[in-house]
Image 1: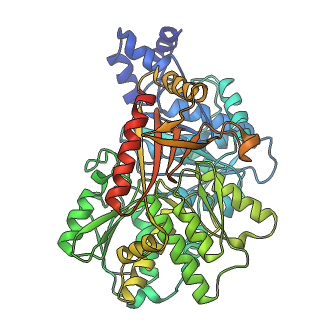
Image 2 (image 1 turned 90 degrees about the vertical axis):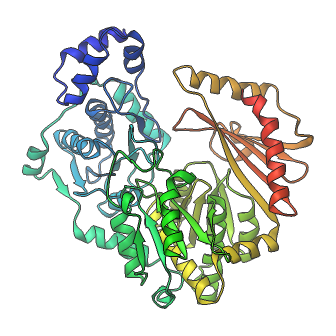
Image 3 (image 1 turned 135 degrees about the horizontal axis):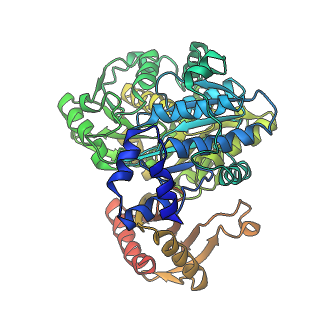
Length: 560
């Protein structure tokens, strides 16, 4: 079957020279052909993501057209404005894929609002809401290596598409022939017919205004003299992040020169993910040279942000996603109470794999902290529930340990632009009172206990990888561990049992241990990896880290 499909593609005019060349290059190589054609990229709630190249198991204009026809078929059943917003980041082929998607939608009689320059995930979520669209499409592979691109689909609320909608889209995709099934018109024709329009300046200005409205202490940053080094990691963050920071009064910004402008090859960091040290290395070198108070980096689609903070001895320390989530929750609560802007019955939301330290902080400030499944759409879902009850103002903050944060209901996905603004405002505030982010973090640990959080990942590459992962999760359920490194499991929470958890079904296991530590096992939804999340407690950092290492060694054989 896969050989037949290969021949069909090889005989077609694929409109993209790179695809024809690749198919010529792999002629006669059964393994290479099988890898590209034996399966198709599966459309799920995270959309599509895959390596760029020829074939049904790769990201290319034909797979994008097929997916967009599926989205178009779903939109046509929805009534409403019959409009879809589109954005794209700096990845290779991003602008091509955005235009191809627009051409398919236009051919289906659906209106398109497309950003004429690359813009981040939160800007796409905002435009979807601003124009009352039926759906949104973001061309991005988030923080994956350069050879990847992807396609995220959003619902009318600007939140990633629901499981039900994604299932309808996927069913439609399966009925659409990848090479001939999608309707299509040229981008020029779509523009000429008025079906494709660019996002207006009014929408962009409203996006920036909504972010700047989330300041906790407006005006404070103007006088604090904060010195910042920033890297957009060759992605979409440069324009929106620097604009917002300058608007609130932070002007001493040095951009990492090698990572300033869009570059889909990500030549300075093969894995442009602010969660990993290598992506922040150039920024850290520059921060030390400039003696900056703070160094921050946003990922290519600017929905995540990572930072390094300056310590008292002049060194720089990376802040984990959990630590920043706790710091921002603490800062927002403390500041809004001080300013009298805290809503009645405030709500914050975090994912089930994030740190229990946040529960302690929320409790201290009288904030209801809701726990949701991993994936920011579940935080968006909580905002939607508040919106349905006419109570959106109650939402003050949401976060995931994987460096994603959101303050305010104006978008429904994580937003590195508002996060960058609040992190800088927080740094400016602590600087203005003779303190620092580092000092405040230590105070939080002194107040609530020394928590340590660490995520490990086990990769399962190749076509058999997913089967191995499924087998491991089945084995953990059939033979549940009773202890890890001598610590007794006192409670096992299986999120595959929604009747017990009260949350939608998910392939996640949480083990609570007798010393207060937790171990979480969760297969990734977007990559062939099983992630393990550890939370340990100790009298100091060294002890907490040593406890984590013992637990990690005990988990390894179970995931072999």
